[in-house]
Length: 300
Image 1 (cartoon, helix red, strand yellow):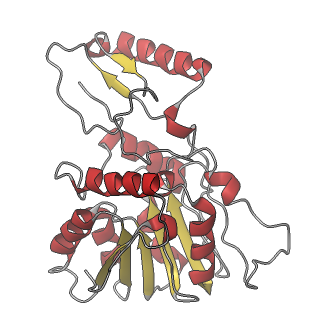
Image 2 (cartoon, one colour; image 1 turned 90 degrees about the vertical axis):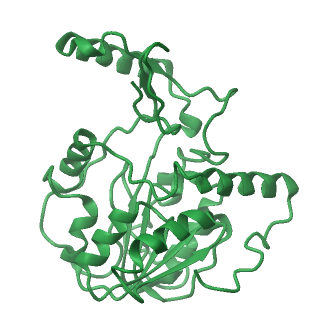
């Protein structure tokens, strides 16, 4: 990790905010969460097919199709194995990783330093107030980070100004109801789907859907804080429009999809389509229950 990080919250003196962002960092400093690669074979295959057209090819494995990248930035430590795969497939890439969690960054360094010497730099930062250098990166990556941000407009501007004219922005994230407060109609549809699945798989008959309760919040302080506004913030400019600093804006993401950025010719291939991404726990009653990861994953 780079030295001299100093006061990473220096742009805010709001005591309530400082308390929340400190709690956010501490939440992801927990050993059970540091450097986690979330997912399962079934969900990975589903999203892979939606994003790339091939259930065996993840979105980040398509990055080399867009060109040769040298200077990259990652917003959020992400999963070490995902970052490792990106570095493996892009051998000339140096990646600078920003995250609020010091322990997550330390875990990433331990996992990657030996395999990719001098190719990973980590910086602890409150991403709500991150400052990125102008015209510095030909690729910026963010995976499941934006739905933890409240200052979306600032971060989107930083991404835009920091990309080179031919750079790309790859984003995959939860886009949906803030704080996972889903409409009753959506809940009923998913509960009905669970009942139908239980007909085919009897092991599911004792399972139940448990929806996040905003009044009894067990997630991180910034979890899904503005997840319903991500698409609006990344809305495209009018045809022929230019970003404020004079370069074309990055293409907006769709629901949990990757989004390519500017200038370079897109490779031919399947179109990435939006995919529903509800966040809920599915679990059995207390008898025999196994603890999940506390972030809305399946529990049984």
